[in-house]
Image 1 (spheres, rainbow, N blue to C red):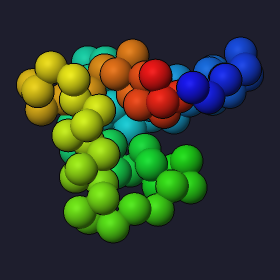
Image 2: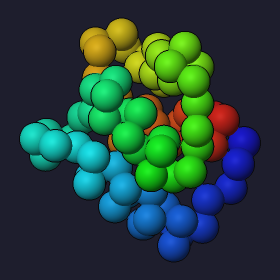
Image 3: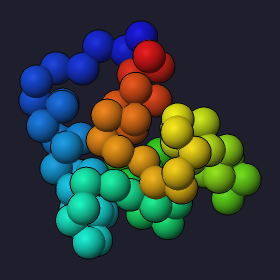
Image 4: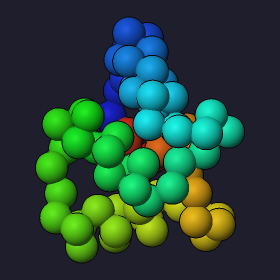
Length: 75
């Protein structure tokens, strides 16, 4: 598990909120890709799709900030 400081958490939340185009608190796969790019995580299309599917715990096609953070920290 990767530790995240309070400052890093705030930065991650801000980055997540910026790509959440409709502001509903959930991001879709294209927004997820933009989020990773904004965080300097360059993945291939296949890697990004796999990461999205792994992160979308409930399989609803969207990722919450909590789901993202669990993936980001390796929880």
